[in-house]
Length: 326
Length: 96
Length: 96
Image (cartoon, rainbow over all chains, first blue to last red; front, top):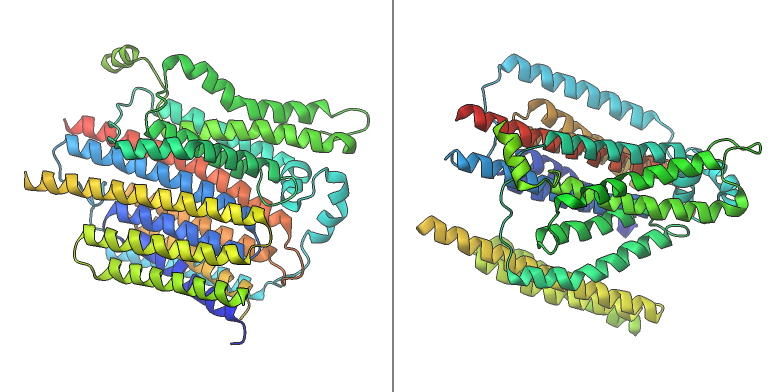
C-alpha cells in the first residue's frame, strides 16, 4: 500500500460500480438519470487516471452532458404525456407485468455466463502488451498533426471517423422522421436568473469549444469534444428560448448536418490520384486538410447534437395541425 | 513553504466539501440541504482553486483556474436557484 | 493491484450490471440506461487495454475507437429516445 493512487483507484472503482447498481435500482426515473450522469463523470475521471484525457473529455461532453440532456428531455415528455392522461406521475412509465421466475433465472444464468467468460478472457489477456503503439509512433511524422489520437481519428483511420459522422447524420434524419407531427411537451419555464446565466456563459462556451477544436492537433481535444461543447451552446439557446427554431431555418440546418460529411468525403476523394489512395493526404498539406475537415465536422456535430436535443423538425404550426388531423 | 500553503488550502477546502456533504445527508428538507451544499461547496471550491493557483506554473494557468472557479460558482448558484424554485413550485402545487 | 486490473474488473462489473438491467428492466427508459451502462463498461475495457505503465504513452488506437463508440452511442440513444417518445404518444392516443 505504498502508492497513494491505489486508494484513489479503489475508491473510484467502488464508486463507479455502486453508481451503476444505483442507476438501475433507483425507484424514481429522474434520480436514475441523475445517477447515470454522475456515473459518467466519475468514469471520465477514471479515464483521466488511465491517461486517456481525450476519451474522458468526449465522455464528459457527449456521453454524459448531451446524453443527460436528451434523457431528461425525454423524461419530461413522458411525464407530460402521462400527466395529460390524468395518471399519477409514474415512477416507471411502462406498465409493469409480472415476469415468471424461470425467465428471471434464465436471464441471471445468461448474464453470469457472459460475465464469467469476459472476466476469464480479461484476466488471461496480456495486459499492456504490444498494441499499435509502435506503428502509430512510426507514422506520426507523416500524419500532419502532433497528437496521437487526432492522427488516428483523422488520418490513419479516417474511414471510421467518416462513418461515425454518417451515423450521426442518419440519427438526425431518423429522429426527424420519427418525431414528425409529434406534439411537444411545453418546455419548463426557466426564470430570469437562468437567462442571465445563459447569456453570461454562452460566449465563454463558444471560446472553449473553439479552443478544444484548435488544440486537438497537438494536445487532447478535437472535433468531437469541441463539437459537443458547441452543441451545449445550442442546447442553452433552445432552453433559454433565446433562439426559437423557425421552419424557414430548416434548409440551413440541413446544410449544417451534411456539411461535415460532405467535406470529409469530398477531401477524401479529391486527394485520390497521383498514386495515392482515398484518404491518403499529401504530407505537405496534411495539417491544412485535417484542420479544414475538423473545423467543418465540428460545425456539423454541434448542429446535429443540438437538433437531436430539439428533436422534432421545426414545422409551421398550421402545417403540423393539418398533418395531425389528416 | 508554498507547497505547504497550497496543500493546507486544498485540505481545508476538502473539509468544507465534507461538511457540505454531511449537510446534504443530514439536513431535514430540501432548502436546508441546498443551503449546506451551495455554501459549503462554494467556499470549498474557492479554497481548492486558490491552493491549485499557488502551485500553477504560469500566469496562464492561474487565469484558467480562476475562470474554472468563476464558471463553476456561477453554474452551482444557478442550479441551486433552479432547484429551490422548482421545489417551491412543487410545494405550492402540493398544498393547493 | 495495478490500475489496469482494477479498472478492467470495474468495466466488466459495469457491463454485467448493464446486461442484467437490459434483460430485466421493464421500463423502456431504464432499458436504454442499462444499454448505456454496457457501452460504458466496454469503454472501460478498451481504455484499460490502451493503458501503459506511466512513463510510456498509451496506445492511441483504442482511444480513437472509444471516442467513435461514444459518438455512435449518442446517435443510437437519440433514435431510441425518439422512438420511446413516439410510442408513448401513440399509446396515449390509443387509451383516449
